Image 1: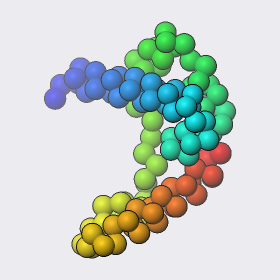
Image 2 (image 1 turned 90 degrees about the vertical axis):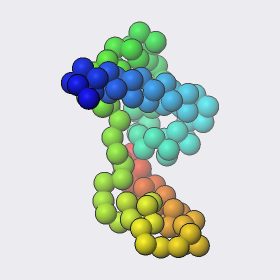
Image 3 (image 1 turned 180 degrees about the vertical axis):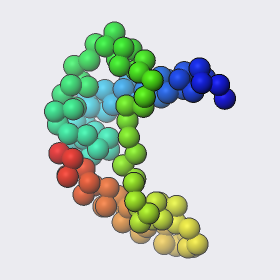
Image 4 (image 1 turned 90 degrees about the horizontal axis):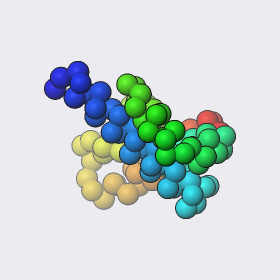
Length: 107
């Protein structure tokens, strides 16, 4: 993959993220805050972006969203390495609870 292709992929990911974020915020703000892991202030800014501003922000050469799964425990719970499918629902619930706590820290 060339550098230009990488930049194009990043811009596309940014655009998709911004469009999804705006849609979620408009549909159910509280749910969007949780699912996106953003603060109320950030949600307000995203909701007010015009289409031209969305395109401008999306054209950045850096991803504007970030991974909320940044520790080994949450990754292990999400991927369920070495465990049967019986524990899958419990593992995913545990991971969601941990990530929800991080949402509260960000808010």
